[in-house]
Image (cartoon, rainbow, N blue to C red; front, side, top):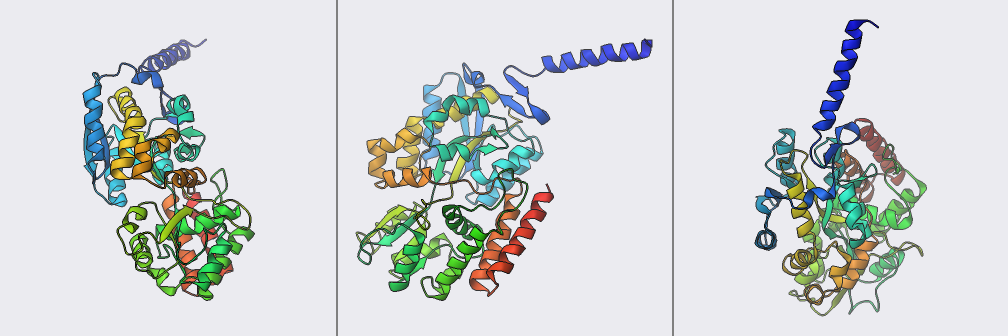
Length: 423
């Protein structure tokens, strides 16, 4: 054998062995260089970690950090509050991640950011940590942290839509969207988030999921928005606008506008998030409304859209073991209870919904657990932002601007496929 070639082989073997030896204690690189974190890293972890999440408006985040630090002898956590706006939170996190900054060990991320962050190599693969605790969480919340067969975050708080209805105007909660629209036409109507933004994407997907449709393929490689089911759903929504079940004003409504309209007695039904329940108890409609999980579609069960925030670990953390220990702690029973009672953040742990304190703080806890359980993630893709924009712009065009259902969905289909090919 040529000596130069022989020496090269020996050197290559040495480099491979050296790289393997430098993989870290318990953290190792998976396919594509992804760092995989073993749950044992959290055992006996020590040092400091920083949690970066949106503004702590209720003080609940600071409370659980203080609780953690008082009870734990090894890891000390610090809270960094990001802006209230989700877009600004994402921008500040991405700025740090692109710079490979170790400042944020634990990231509070919207469920729709998971695929983007993971695809960029910015997160630890937490699959082993999730498998160890999987049975503790509501299944849909775990699914919200999954991308390409791996889990990238620990479920922290969740969300799912409800149907609000006036108990003095209808006899019982509708069980199908067909019944909602029919009764809305005969009463004061239905309000939802119909403006040209993410909220309309969610509202459309809730009906699409209930009907058995989907926006993109399971492998995330192509659009499935231009389907007979999607055409049926969008035509149904357009029909509700034309026959008066849904008023034209809904075209400008986001969460707050629809909430205020319902509380002012301008509608019999409202699609809304859980936060509006407690506010409704302080409005003139107190005692005159109730909530129920989203209805089904022609005999099929309801299909909500999962929301909320999960806890991901930055791939640039200097203390991943400590970060995992902290993330596990604040997704435990007592911190989850505090989040529900003090911040009205829906828990991800199944057992927390049975806690007496949580039931008192969230009188609709049983309905909330059912709503979360029946919900599904929004399209999981690194280009979700473009997918959502294609959906809400074209659904809006069909609902409010006179575009045909057929042309709107074909246009959305083209735009989604273009976005998927760009990654």
